[in-house]
Image 1 (cartoon, rainbow, N blue to C red):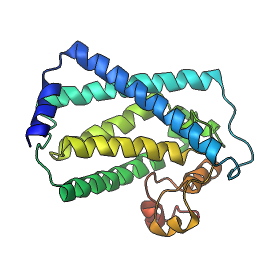
Image 2: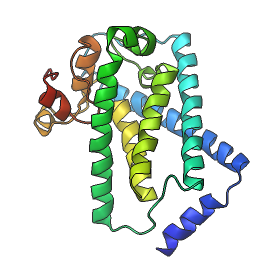
Image 3: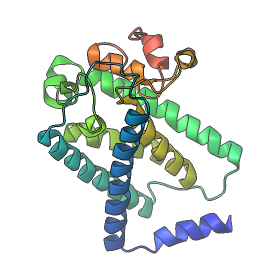
Image 4: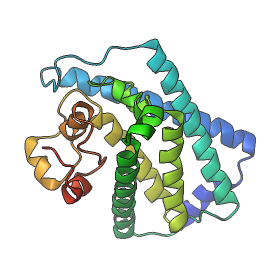
Length: 237
């Protein structure tokens, strides 16, 4: 309890300039961590390619990924503002069991919301404006996760903030979820199968699951799981 209180107190005492610096450093670290993690797995699993070739590295994709990084910084600052003004409340005392329940709850709620958002993004009119850039990557590379339209990045970020406003989650639940989200997104955009085949029976959104979506845009809209695709008839094994 004391540890968490002092942890929250540290952040409560940061000035806005310090928050901007913290958001810049933390998001830049996560961006580089994702790329480094991707390249590490890519090297270790070099014989397990899903598609023959990776998507080529393009400078235009690099610039888009920088814009995504900048917008992630903005989203974090929006979340901080809502926390400081009382719209987001962080619970300060949780058991390990409660933390696990909260993390699973966030994942399932976000998975459903992202499924709906992703499905709508494939409406022909919206797709041309919002989602086509991401699907230029029929195969993937280390930047694919960050090659998103700005409105798409903001949409995903604001959905997370909405979920965090809904309930007074522990700050640790949120931090662990955000790390899982980054790692899962990175794994999902590998051109190497990361998961053993038997995990498909666990309804997980495996690497091949999302890779199938890049090949067949009308299937596999889920992110963390395949539950909603199986439920609504958009699943492809």
